[in-house]
Length: 104
Image 1 (cartoon, helix red, strand yellow):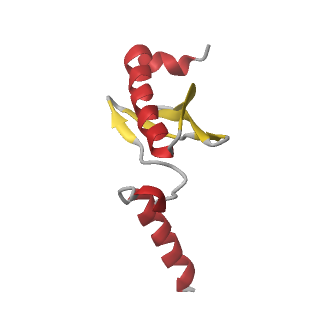
Image 2 (cartoon, rainbow, N blue to C red):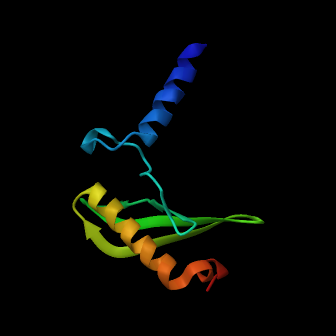
């Protein structure tokens, strides 16, 4: 019935809503566009801390390439880790550009 559709709509709306502190427990933070790349924070919980982590994606002619990254820095709050993941992601884009997708 309709019930499912409205739940999905709520879920999607919550994903794009501006984060209102702890209430916005949406699993993935908003991705940020940067120089043709998308940087999506994906902090990982480590004990009571959050690891800086994220995924950089870019659309190529042959599809989307992904570059996951994790850094050792930990943060006490998830939103701090998300913010830092965006900062790190921009640094990676600036430093490596498309070379990040070339493998090791």
